[in-house]
Length: 107
Image (cartoon, rainbow, N blue to C red; front, side, top):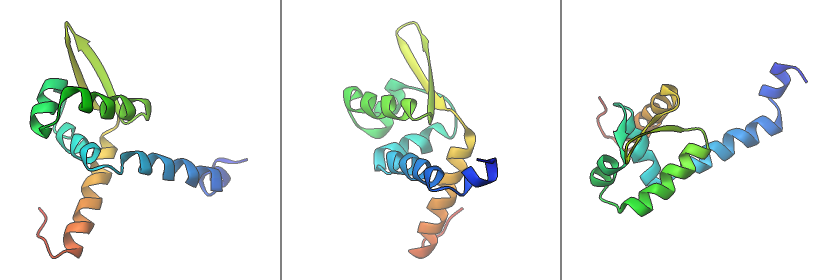
């Protein structure tokens, strides 16, 4: 199968759908938004999202396994960042479309 055939194959679209489905969670979308401005510690994310670290860790772990996030440890502190900046750009475009459909200003 050529690269072009794979790109248009049912299997490829299944992978894309699975990736999108995994991020289709308000907390995960907010995590992407927060990390779009740069690396944050688990504590910083927990405070910004107003959720317990145990709950947040489940989201972060899932997103890391999915290839959305990367992490690094510095002593006892774990920091996360986006594995690919295009993920933030894709979310930003989707947010603009949704905002415009609801008559909200973007920008």
